[in-house]
Image (cartoon, rainbow, N blue to C red):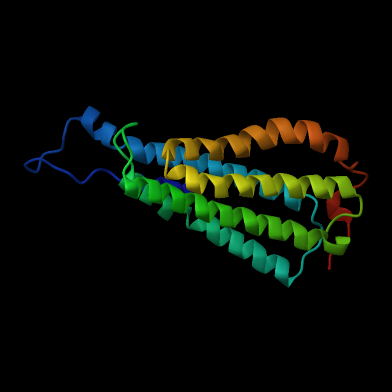
Length: 207
């Protein structure tokens, strides 16, 4: 997340070798700051989901390590995707170009891949319960999987939305990660399925 700051580059346009006035300078940085904040919250959301999944995973194997490494690969490419959003974003909230729409669609597609990887991690860990804590209930496992599936569906749907309204697609990412998942799904569906923590997870055996 901290490496996202390198995507905020100063404008390289000069007039006669003289820097423009500071307000104009900052105005040119607006797309970069918007992209930075957007990606910061998206990655923070992924970190929250990743933390919740791994709080129930008490053992590991090589497939799990490979899947988790691939998820980190998706996250590590985010600064490049932010650079694309910055390079092709319109000034302010003006009309978007075809390149801007494509940049947002690419961003959404990569995040959808990341969501699919997290879903794969959860399915792999809960298959025959060979990597998760015994206290997990079937309802908890199904509810977690469904919530992650809805996140993936939202990112996939936003790919098409990006070609109509890139801003709407970007707002949908924030809503699904911090709005729907946290306030609706977690408080209603997950509350009934949440298992009791009868013992610390670090006391359970690992392979």
